[in-house]
Image (cartoon, rainbow, N blue to C red; front, side, top):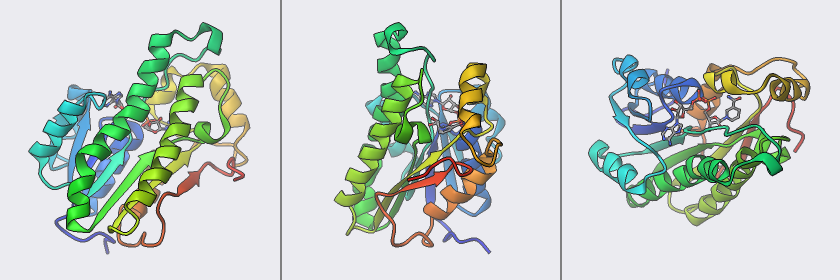
Length: 240
Ligand code: NAI
């Protein structure tokens, strides 16, 4: 039996690939009306039958996010999975523009979607927001300065917003995965991937479906006394 109540709507960003895709399909299977948003129109079109609607969207563009949300109507559940790694180089080789772009997608994109949806969630007295952060935001991965900083900031944002709406029925949590087997890692340098895998006691990559399970719980009524929290899904890597 689904843990979700029928007729709730979800917006999932980064829904065309990897974790976002697994979350969008899982929530749709569980009875939510899912709006899948991403930059990649072609990939979205391939999943059009699995979700209620698809939306080509750049999460860095607040006006575009607001327009998309207005088009969807009600958003009860927001899953922020849109993200980029950026160049994997030491800080002295990191171009400012690439650093700023990584922050723009991972951090400002999360800010934008929450800003566009949270007022209505508060009015309705119910909402669930799940931000996909990363273990990199807790520990800092070398050669991922923009990524690690953006994910640490997403954790800080989650903690702030969670407290702001704690009495409004809107719960805001983050998850911190270690390496998950998704297309994102196709661009990760082999030595960076090796470093990340070597830190996972279970000695394997996580799967998008394993992440979707956790996100589904965080997006439901079953999650009732947690907000502003960070849930690890890291094969034992996270120690705090
Ligand atoms: P992915 O690369 O498979 O999917 C990310 C999606 O975000 C892509 O479909 C991409 O088109 C979309 N996207 C990028 N920029 C966008 C923008 N400006 N507007 C809208 N959509 C945009 O990556 P994956 O692995 O599914 O990652 C999802 C989230 O999980 C990301 O936030 C990532 O940082 C996080 N994460 C991933 C881990 C992993 O090992 N795969 C580990 C920890 C966190």
